[in-house]
Length: 393
Image (cartoon, rainbow, N blue to C red; front, side):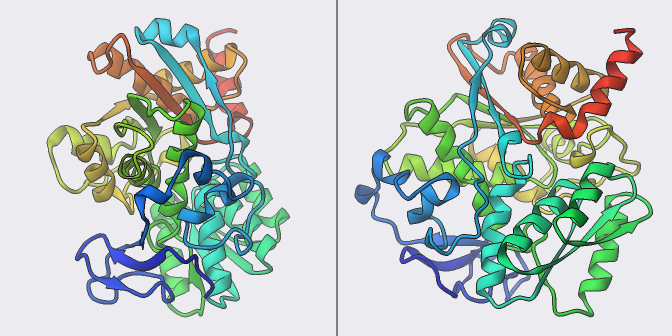
């Protein structure tokens, strides 16, 4: 496996044990998820040099596990950071920006992590990669597998939107549609992968899905002239975004590129909010809801693979977690869309969450707040259309 010079080991997030980068997967000692570690001289990392490696994710190759020329890339990253003055006025803060991850290759934030996870799979000599997904991950996996010349097996529940299912096949992936919800698809995946020589790229089973997410923190800081926002509100399912943002924010502080890391805030739909509920109750590990149900399909993850680590990220950054109803979420998406920025229900979760946080006094009047639009609104347009029709609009 060809890795970058600074990538020295994989560290277990549970027991702290270290192993060489080659095997990947989970910790051989305790089964915990692994996280890449680097030998980086802070004085050698500059603002100019950090983003000098190329376009998109490759720009950050000096602090990623793989050299830029090795990366399986499809132009992900370098997404717009769009200011919304009217929403800033409503929330009573100095500025609000949307980091529009819908501009990634397959229209979702998951592309960042998938680029690294598929690179690792190819470098490890895998022939087939596999995962369970609520749709966006399956589409991204199929697309990046095609770029790498690998096969892809995606297990998705029947409620996944048609566009995601179609694109898995369009990209050349094989798809198993499982009756039920995400847990049913995840169970089917676990049963199938046990009897196959497949490389898992499921969240937190690959060390690289959450590693790719840290580049979001780098881009946000660069887009704000190398200052960290006061808070980032992220729609949260498995927790990969929060874990990656925590690591990326800490990197920037350690390297002296920003003064402080942002507060991280998880936004979830009330119909499936295990992380927000655990945060409110002061629990260390989320408890799966008995009957998860929300219009935000990508966030309907009742038993998040990174739930405990997402809670750690919130605590480490003095953050917060909120849950809002589907109606408020759709209203949030419409508010932003009416301002000319394409946003669907998943991104609307961040808007609705920010509104609740503002009402609770979580923001100061001089704060800069970034909302992450993690999925293009084009994938969820039917939801917004139905929402507007229900209001007679």
